[in-house]
Image (cartoon, rainbow, N blue to C red; front, side, top):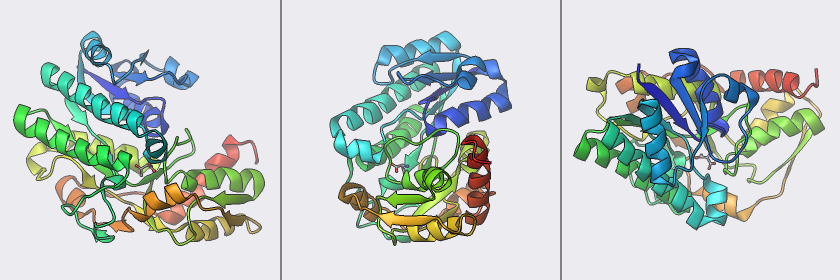
Length: 318
Ligand code: AKB
């Protein structure tokens, strides 16, 4: 079989997606590619691992050729908060990285999974039941790269017949690898701090409503979309996707059900608050449901219970 490549494989989603895909396709068939950050022993020892810079065409080209790659899950990206502090880096990694992946996919006839985000929307987008096809005037650099990435993926499908597919992920909550530099990171940090210190200082306002999803559903979504019957896909890229939505105050209350003396404080970061305020409260993901059977397994309560159980063990606080 042709092999699968995961870029950004040391990141929050990439590290777990690599292991998920290795379980589906076999360890040796899934190549993990990271950039500088040391991979975990599990990631490194369970299958092929390489360091690459997605911004360098020769790196992307080289790994696709070396391993006879048939499908690329392109997770390598700079997230929203880091993107605002380093906009030039964000453009370089997110746009040139994606362009290089698209070019390699065109040349070697690979399929590509392109993750977009709620960040592809902006302040003029309808915030409730945000339609699949709507106004997208993103106002963060990360958001700009996500909108452009969606368009680029559509272009490569229409112009060069590259099998591009993708979703707009909401905030992803997980206990394995910490997210790095996003606006929704609070929804992961809060669990670590609740277990370690019974207190968390949130950088978003208590009433900031955002879409979210638990990692097992995010992994299954990527896999299911890439395995979906293409004749059913009216859209290809940028499917709206959500599992639940909540505010920081609501999440704190859910955690309090398990840790009654948990205390939530607020110290709002204007940059990340501004980004969050430009994102939807809740996306309409009916196209993903109709076209490829998207159905999340975890609701908010199930996620909170599982996160607390798994992290308590991980942090040795049993
Ligand atoms: C971020 O907060 O930047 C990401 C995202 C929603 O794309 N988690």
